[in-house]
Image (cartoon, rainbow, N blue to C red):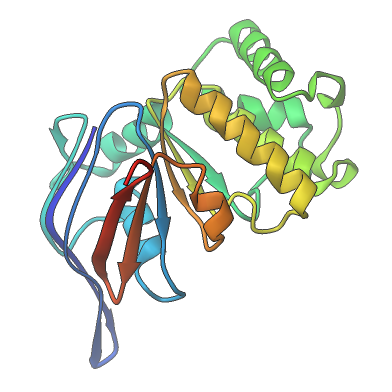
Length: 226
């Protein structure tokens, strides 16, 4: 599903070159559940951005579902992001003026899905995350845990093969965080691949595999059975 070979990412900041990733080899198979951990500045978010086609490597090879990402134009990258990948962010990234229903419909709107089908699929996803009765509520009318559930419903509504989650419990209290972890377990059980960035060791233990990154390099790759 995800295959990286000797991937490097260098950011040019004035006269200084910052090497965020230094020759990373990383593979994720279909229906794996992988947690990526490491200290601040280790390269976790850079790795996530590359996996999600939000950025491109400076060098190295990246294939997503057998397709080489290097050289793809903006339109193709946008299509991949919309159809193959679901994103869940720590800050939720919901539209403040839109209802939960409308927020979940967004990826379908960008994908050209007809109105009736959009509404049906968004309603189905909100029901799946336990928020069918909050469909007309705006983000300001929802709790943090509820907003993250809306964000997860939005990430899943296009039925992506891969879900990328960047600190999905970071802004939540422990009870809401446990609810989100349980929801990701259900998503994984449904057959989807999950790659999750987290600073919380307890959250990382729910994944079937934990990858530790430090100073732009993967220093440990451990399965739950190890």
